[in-house]
Image 1: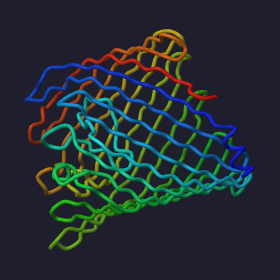
Image 2: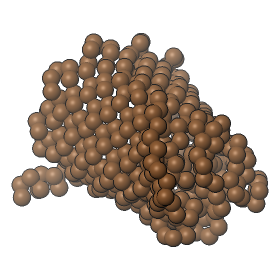
Image 3: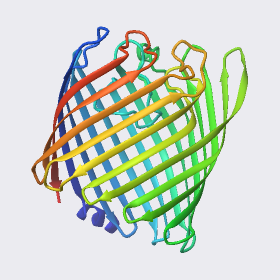
Image 4: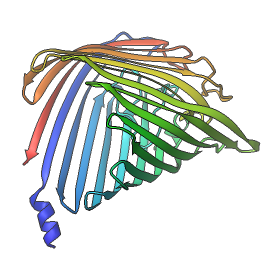
Length: 379
């Protein structure tokens, strides 16, 4: 009881609200215009022995009727001095999600994000659940060991939605070792595995595992370079077909830099096999991401970002990626602070698909106006 009372006494609750209106030209019968609002409320309390965190994030979009999605989580953390901790987390989500490539991203938190929107309507009824256990321990001054295990469910919430976005379920495992080789260099090993079963007609199953070695280095003030490389293996199964096992390459490269006081930038690339959320097939995909922010601090800030993805292998299903399929998404925005806790942003988003699926436009462009406010609710 004293521990519970101490936790309650340190309770903090913060919130934020975001509204956005966007408009663009209808292409292929799809109108990207909409208005939306999202709330995010998080509560936390902690003491020397552990911490509790809770969150609730409802959102609503006015387009093709009223679309509502709610996500929430609860998390308990137990600390063993300064050397180790264990964290148990449960996250849930349910509702209608806008998967348009020019939408404000409310990405599925419990599963892979569809690179390409499902065919048909851009709104999909989604359910998600992620039950996870994380462990982290400092074995010595230079060595840290950690791991996590999760049971993940994500996809269509009903039979109609699952024809577009199959429901997937299965375990996700990860173990990592980090070694501080020098004050500026970190070496690591990571083993990860994921098994997904799909609710589509073929009852497909995709299992992907990888082992990567990583090197993270600080090459200067405000500059960090991260590299990882290793082998991967994927095993695909479906009804009335023999299982296939294929070896893949897995790698990432990320550079983050602050070349000037007001300018920060990041550039990254990756290659990895993934279970495709639409078709259930394993596809190797390469991606590039870039972002830059010019922030005058208390003045106008300008941000730009670009994400690009290309399928390196092909699937066989109607909605499966084909080798060479390209996906591009970008955003340019300017943000003006209205107060210490609120700002107004204006900008444009665009997306391009080299091989649109049924009822999808090849490219889309929208302009948007958004307002964000931070709400300290309990201190």
